[in-house]
Structures are given as structure tokens and as C-alpha cells.
Image (cartoon, rainbow, N blue to C red):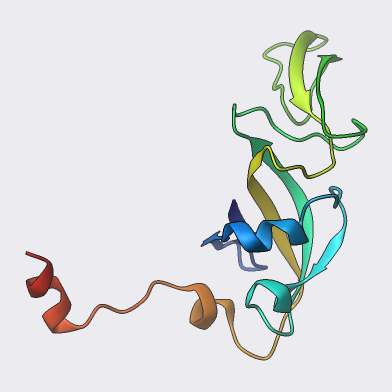
Length: 134
């Protein structure tokens, strides 16, 4: 599972979550808060804001359960109308995280003692590393 963690400045950090830790998120809903210490972000509190499944269908708040549903949408998550009053039937995923979710969006609610840049930022490459890879 891939976690996209957004901070208050607008930066987003991509975190690859191992299979063993995916269990922490299964059963949670959009809008639930999670302790960041469970995924290596000690002192942080994270809010689930959305995600998408392996087929690319977005999760939508208000759709109960984990199943895919075809809804008549006039805007919001999953559909962006081109004209005023336009509606379309679109497939969206429920608001509960399941094992079919591959990407989850999280927002920082409470910051920890160390900055996200230090915990999740780009890892500095040593001068000798790039030469060894060639």
C-alpha cells in the first residue's frame, strides 16, 4: 500500500507501507485519525482523507462499506462536471479501507517533534553511491 502524507505547507510525501503494516488501516474509514507512530512517524496524528483501489476507482465519503457502487453524481469526488447541472453515473469505492485499496491519502492533523522533511524527505546520496551503481 502506498501512503501519500500531506503536511500543512502543501508538500506531499510518498511512503511505501509493507504488507505486515497494512492491517493497521484495514477497517478504518475516511475521516478516522491514526497514530503516526505505527508507521514510523512518532508524535504525528494523521487523518484519512481518501484513496483509490487497484482499478483506480476513488474512495468516496458517504458510500458505506468497501464495495464498488455506481452512483449518479453531480460533482465531488469521482466526477468533475463540465457544465452546470450535468450528472453522470460513475463507479466509486466505499469509504472503508479494505485489502483492495492500493493508495491512501493522509493529512497531518498534529505534528510531532521532528519535521516530516527529516523523516520522509529525499534521502541524500553519497558521492560514491552514484559511481558504484554504474
